[in-house]
Amino acid sequence: MVIRSIEELLARAQPYASGRRRFMLGVTGPPGAGKSTLAGLLAAHLGDRARIVGMDGFHLAQSELERLARADRKGAIDTFDVAGYVALLRRLRDPGERVVYAPLFRRDLEEPVGSAVPVARDVPLVVTEGNYLLAEQDGWPNVRELLDEVWYVRTPEETRLRRLIARHVAYGKEPEAARAWVMRSDQRNAELVEATRHRADVMVELAEG
Image: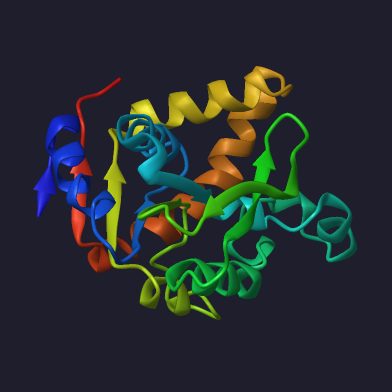
């Protein structure tokens, strides 16, 4: 299924945020595709009935990436704590606790911050977004098993690359360094993510923006 309008996506999510059982919705796609923007639109539209839990909250700390000699490719699939992410999704899927706290990735710090996102028991829809929700290596298949539905966001390549470069510049990289990082590290990650899109339930293709 391909959806090309925000209105149709919001209408699809509406019943997910109205049920008695918690619904786990994944939003995935390559870096710069617009996953966070779409998740934010859903949360803004649904208000207290939805909560965003980002996969990026499970980035390994910079000190650990340096210890593992992976700091030069931060954002690659092996620079995340997938076991921790899966454990949190399991807690969220069958809410038995009054509130579950999820971590948040702070781009201004380039570090995850723990216990930053409270998810109350009565929130019916959890939206989790990230690059590797459909990955089939290591512990990542466990993520897909815990999600009721996954949307894959596609964006024209020129737009996606422009967004990524602008993001890196906004957070302190020089333009040439930002472009080099995007074309080396981010692009390698994007190719891996693109290979997983066949596992999505919905393909999202919004107008360029």
